[in-house]
Image (cartoon, rainbow, N blue to C red; front, side):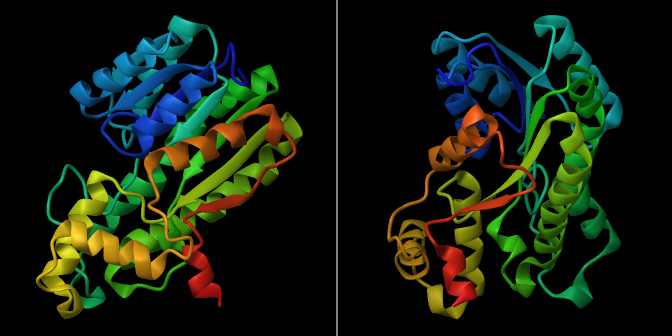
Length: 274
């Protein structure tokens, strides 16, 4: 197993989406997992699945927009496992705690919406790195993966705040990789495409309500139409595809890869570039 003996923190590791799949994929390759999530029940369930694979796991309830809670969770990880080898920053989204999504038109957006979505998507990653990087520097080794989004490359005004925040994640990754390279710390980024998750189902429901072209479709019909027309490989993108990409990037197979933003999207970005 490629990650035998490694300890990974996965923020946003609960639920049924990318975070949980990343935790599972890392565990399948031998890593012990600290599952961090603001939803305590989701975090425990994900942690139990890791344990069912024969790995050690710790579930920590925390809001990673709060530096004090991050300090606590990092110390709890050190106290339990004695080290940290891998940090995966998954927390993000276009809204918080399943409330209504932000205003689509720029002139209707509020300072509160910008603050909230930036905090959720980029502040979380910055604060987690600030807390964990000193440990990596001390041990002269570490792997960081920031989860961004294909939306950082698209030009969709209806997702303006989210897209701008994710573009910031991409550039933060490159800048951090440059600075930490001398300490033998790899920093990379994964840009998921339209992964079939509960979040995508909620987005699909919103698109059906707001875009005339999709009126009358069910959520399943919309997702099928989106996959068929917008993913060149014509295959459904699943959370485990993201988990496997992350697992590769934190393994020794990728020891010479840093500062890169890897799109895992079935070729969706090719439509933008072409």
